[in-house]
Amino acid sequence: RRRGAAAAWHQAFPDHHRYGAADWARVGARVQSERVEALVTTEKDWVRLRPVVAARGSSSPVPCWILTVRLNVVEGAEALDARLDRLYAR
Image (cartoon, rainbow, N blue to C red; front, side):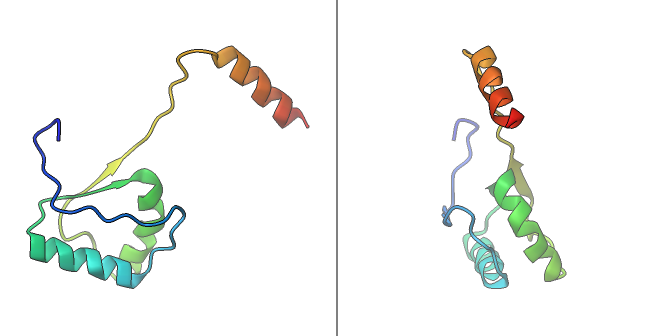
């Protein structure tokens, strides 16, 4: 929205959803009916969705933009590293 885009629709799936061919077919139908210019998904979901798309021998009917999430520890990085070191040392 900050870049001037408008969402045609939003489809939420449960966390760790196992995407199937029917899911991709519904997305494709929605793309056609809503005249969507691009799909947006998270990197995490694209990892699970990509094999479904490939198995159907197709690609996305429109560009698929994949959002990458990065973690930036602003404060307490040393304490976090020390804690993780203790956990991995076990």
